[in-house]
Length: 257
Image (cartoon, rainbow, N blue to C red; front, top):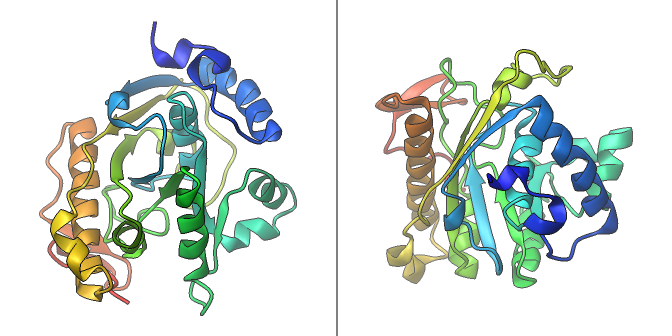
């Protein structure tokens, strides 16, 4: 039996907010019917203890598809997401009720999200970060350059960073705008978990922007490799950067401040 076919009680007995468990118990079986699941490498995701999960961002359906995978592998995700969502009537209420973490992008308060994430990690939770910061603008859907927040958080806390490549959610909700899900034909949600990103040599310079930039590059390389494996394609040599509006050399790690 695949893990997706398990009942929630069999797949995840970790404590969570009652609303979170109730929603998962309703939505999970529905996702099992309206989508197909190709989940690989789940044994590499720690079942307990603090972990930072990093993944590519291809669709507004990502949190649903990835949440399904994580919850059915024993983890309740605490995802960093743009604070604008907290101002939407239903979505904002859900984000607050499910203890997700708002990011005040492009403001002096942006760093507060990392402090909140560090607190969640101190409680042994699973923090989810999309290092690109937004849905990819790469013309072929490949991961873009990453922001350094995930690397900075890992270097400050010593918590392992587990990369995940995903493919398929964009078939349910294509484009960068939220839309009504396309459920026919039934799409496959592909998830591939990689080995923890090796940051050991960067801890001595954990407060350095250069270390965070290098860590960010390693994180995006790991994610991109996993996405290439799922797509059965070789990733492009360069990586798309939104500020440049084009692909640039992959050894440019993204923002370092």
